[in-house]
Length: 198
View 1 (cartoon, rainbow, N blue to C red):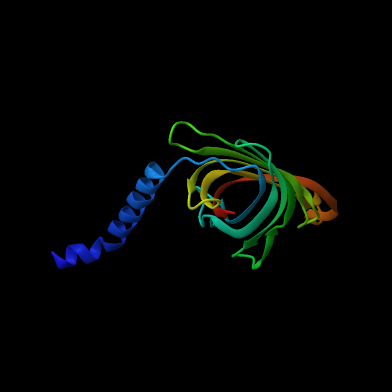
View 2: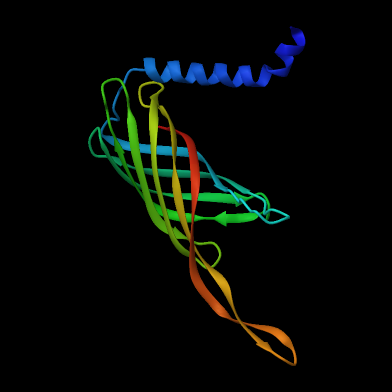
Protein backbone atom coordinates (compact mmCIF):
# COMPACT_ATOMS: atom_id res chain seq x y z
CA UNK A 1 0.00 0.00 0.00
CA UNK A 2 2.88 2.36 0.81
CA UNK A 3 4.52 1.65 -2.55
CA UNK A 4 1.23 2.32 -4.32
CA UNK A 5 0.84 5.66 -2.52
CA UNK A 6 4.40 6.77 -3.24
CA UNK A 7 4.01 5.83 -6.91
CA UNK A 8 0.91 7.99 -7.37
CA UNK A 9 1.75 10.70 -4.83
CA UNK A 10 2.37 13.45 -7.42
CA UNK A 11 -0.85 12.60 -9.26
CA UNK A 12 -2.82 12.75 -6.01
CA UNK A 13 -1.23 16.09 -5.10
CA UNK A 14 -2.19 17.58 -8.46
CA UNK A 15 -5.76 16.29 -8.14
CA UNK A 16 -6.08 17.80 -4.63
CA UNK A 17 -4.79 21.17 -5.83
CA UNK A 18 -7.17 21.12 -8.80
CA UNK A 19 -10.12 20.25 -6.54
CA UNK A 20 -9.22 23.04 -4.08
CA UNK A 21 -8.95 25.61 -6.88
CA UNK A 22 -12.26 24.45 -8.34
CA UNK A 23 -13.97 24.68 -4.96
CA UNK A 24 -12.51 28.15 -4.42
CA UNK A 25 -13.69 29.29 -7.84
CA UNK A 26 -17.18 27.91 -7.31
CA UNK A 27 -17.61 29.31 -3.80
CA UNK A 28 -16.01 32.73 -4.33
CA UNK A 29 -18.32 35.72 -4.33
CA UNK A 30 -18.64 37.05 -7.87
CA UNK A 31 -17.57 40.65 -7.19
CA UNK A 32 -17.08 42.73 -10.32
CA UNK A 33 -14.15 45.15 -10.78
CA UNK A 34 -14.75 48.67 -9.51
CA UNK A 35 -14.38 51.85 -11.54
CA UNK A 36 -10.91 53.40 -11.39
CA UNK A 37 -7.29 52.30 -11.71
CA UNK A 38 -6.61 48.60 -12.35
CA UNK A 39 -3.29 46.80 -12.77
CA UNK A 40 -2.15 43.30 -13.73
CA UNK A 41 1.05 41.31 -13.10
CA UNK A 42 1.15 37.96 -14.91
CA UNK A 43 3.22 34.91 -15.77
CA UNK A 44 2.98 33.91 -19.45
CA UNK A 45 3.80 30.52 -20.94
CA UNK A 46 4.00 30.12 -24.73
CA UNK A 47 4.58 26.72 -26.32
CA UNK A 48 5.76 25.68 -29.77
CA UNK A 49 4.71 22.05 -30.15
CA UNK A 50 6.59 20.21 -32.89
CA UNK A 51 5.32 16.92 -34.31
CA UNK A 52 7.39 15.23 -36.99
CA UNK A 53 7.16 11.93 -38.85
CA UNK A 54 10.84 12.17 -39.73
CA UNK A 55 13.80 11.11 -37.61
CA UNK A 56 15.10 12.82 -35.60
CA UNK A 57 11.94 14.67 -34.64
CA UNK A 58 12.14 18.41 -34.00
CA UNK A 59 11.95 19.38 -30.35
CA UNK A 60 9.06 21.34 -28.89
CA UNK A 61 9.94 24.70 -27.34
CA UNK A 62 8.73 26.53 -24.26
CA UNK A 63 8.81 30.31 -23.76
CA UNK A 64 8.11 31.54 -20.20
CA UNK A 65 7.70 35.24 -19.54
CA UNK A 66 6.28 38.07 -17.48
CA UNK A 67 3.87 40.83 -18.39
CA UNK A 68 2.33 43.82 -16.68
CA UNK A 69 -0.39 46.21 -17.76
CA UNK A 70 -2.10 49.19 -16.18
CA UNK A 71 -5.15 51.20 -17.09
CA UNK A 72 -8.64 52.36 -16.23
CA UNK A 73 -11.76 50.36 -15.41
CA UNK A 74 -14.66 52.31 -16.97
CA UNK A 75 -17.48 50.16 -15.54
CA UNK A 76 -17.78 46.62 -14.10
CA UNK A 77 -17.22 45.14 -17.56
CA UNK A 78 -14.83 47.32 -19.62
CA UNK A 79 -11.08 47.86 -18.99
CA UNK A 80 -8.64 49.71 -21.26
CA UNK A 81 -4.95 50.16 -20.62
CA UNK A 82 -1.44 49.50 -21.85
CA UNK A 83 1.45 47.25 -20.93
CA UNK A 84 4.70 45.51 -21.72
CA UNK A 85 5.76 41.85 -21.76
CA UNK A 86 8.99 39.87 -22.06
CA UNK A 87 9.07 36.19 -23.05
CA UNK A 88 12.32 34.21 -22.95
CA UNK A 89 13.49 31.28 -25.07
CA UNK A 90 14.94 28.55 -22.85
CA UNK A 91 16.44 26.67 -25.80
CA UNK A 92 18.12 29.67 -27.49
CA UNK A 93 18.84 31.50 -24.20
CA UNK A 94 17.63 34.86 -25.51
CA UNK A 95 14.51 37.01 -25.44
CA UNK A 96 11.87 35.62 -27.77
CA UNK A 97 9.25 38.38 -27.75
CA UNK A 98 9.24 41.84 -26.12
CA UNK A 99 6.04 43.73 -27.03
CA UNK A 100 4.43 46.97 -25.93
CA UNK A 101 0.66 46.69 -26.27
CA UNK A 102 -2.79 48.20 -25.78
CA UNK A 103 -4.86 46.04 -23.43
CA UNK A 104 -8.65 45.62 -23.68
CA UNK A 105 -10.57 43.36 -21.31
CA UNK A 106 -14.24 42.45 -20.90
CA UNK A 107 -15.25 41.00 -17.52
CA UNK A 108 -18.54 39.11 -17.41
CA UNK A 109 -20.75 37.95 -14.57
CA UNK A 110 -22.95 34.89 -15.11
CA UNK A 111 -24.61 34.25 -11.74
CA UNK A 112 -21.68 33.23 -9.50
CA UNK A 113 -19.24 32.76 -12.39
CA UNK A 114 -16.83 35.49 -13.55
CA UNK A 115 -15.30 34.64 -16.94
CA UNK A 116 -13.40 37.23 -18.97
CA UNK A 117 -12.16 37.92 -22.50
CA UNK A 118 -8.82 39.60 -23.02
CA UNK A 119 -7.33 41.21 -26.16
CA UNK A 120 -3.88 42.80 -26.56
CA UNK A 121 -2.54 44.51 -29.67
CA UNK A 122 0.90 46.05 -30.06
CA UNK A 123 4.38 45.80 -31.52
CA UNK A 124 7.13 43.24 -30.89
CA UNK A 125 10.62 44.80 -30.70
CA UNK A 126 12.65 41.57 -31.07
CA UNK A 127 14.00 40.00 -34.30
CA UNK A 128 13.47 43.03 -36.50
CA UNK A 129 10.06 43.90 -35.07
CA UNK A 130 6.53 43.05 -36.06
CA UNK A 131 2.92 43.00 -34.99
CA UNK A 132 1.91 41.48 -31.65
CA UNK A 133 -1.60 40.27 -30.83
CA UNK A 134 -2.99 38.10 -28.06
CA UNK A 135 -6.54 36.80 -27.58
CA UNK A 136 -7.55 34.96 -24.46
CA UNK A 137 -10.49 33.63 -22.46
CA UNK A 138 -10.26 32.86 -18.78
CA UNK A 139 -11.71 32.87 -15.30
CA UNK A 140 -11.37 35.49 -12.56
CA UNK A 141 -11.17 34.29 -8.95
CA UNK A 142 -11.84 37.01 -6.35
CA UNK A 143 -9.22 37.24 -3.61
CA UNK A 144 -9.96 40.15 -1.32
CA UNK A 145 -11.57 43.52 -1.87
CA UNK A 146 -9.61 44.68 -4.92
CA UNK A 147 -7.40 41.68 -5.66
CA UNK A 148 -8.15 38.71 -7.90
CA UNK A 149 -6.37 35.80 -9.56
CA UNK A 150 -6.80 35.32 -13.31
CA UNK A 151 -6.25 32.06 -15.19
CA UNK A 152 -6.65 32.05 -18.97
CA UNK A 153 -5.76 30.27 -22.19
CA UNK A 154 -5.52 31.62 -25.70
CA UNK A 155 -3.19 32.27 -28.61
CA UNK A 156 -0.50 34.84 -29.37
CA UNK A 157 0.54 36.14 -32.78
CA UNK A 158 4.16 37.27 -33.04
CA UNK A 159 5.54 39.17 -36.01
CA UNK A 160 9.25 39.23 -36.81
CA UNK A 161 11.66 39.51 -39.73
CA UNK A 162 13.41 36.42 -41.10
CA UNK A 163 16.34 35.99 -43.48
CA UNK A 164 15.54 35.17 -47.11
CA UNK A 165 17.81 33.22 -49.44
CA UNK A 166 17.67 32.67 -53.19
CA UNK A 167 18.53 29.15 -54.32
CA UNK A 168 19.54 27.88 -57.74
CA UNK A 169 21.21 24.86 -59.26
CA UNK A 170 23.97 24.73 -61.87
CA UNK A 171 25.57 21.63 -63.45
CA UNK A 172 29.05 22.87 -62.53
CA UNK A 173 28.55 23.81 -58.86
CA UNK A 174 25.31 22.07 -57.87
CA UNK A 175 22.94 23.81 -55.47
CA UNK A 176 23.82 27.43 -54.67
CA UNK A 177 22.24 29.95 -52.31
CA UNK A 178 22.69 33.65 -51.57
CA UNK A 179 21.30 35.98 -48.94
CA UNK A 180 18.84 38.46 -50.47
CA UNK A 181 17.47 40.29 -47.41
CA UNK A 182 14.72 40.01 -44.82
CA UNK A 183 10.96 39.82 -44.96
CA UNK A 184 8.14 39.95 -42.43
CA UNK A 185 6.91 36.67 -40.96
CA UNK A 186 4.29 35.64 -38.41
CA UNK A 187 3.65 32.73 -36.09
CA UNK A 188 0.79 31.84 -33.78
CA UNK A 189 1.46 29.95 -30.54
CA UNK A 190 -0.86 28.65 -27.79
CA UNK A 191 -0.54 30.45 -24.48
CA UNK A 192 -1.36 29.96 -20.79
CA UNK A 193 -1.45 33.04 -18.55
CA UNK A 194 -1.75 33.13 -14.74
CA UNK A 195 -1.63 36.37 -12.82
CA UNK A 196 -2.88 38.68 -10.14
CA UNK A 197 -4.76 41.96 -10.48
CA UNK A 198 -4.67 44.84 -8.06
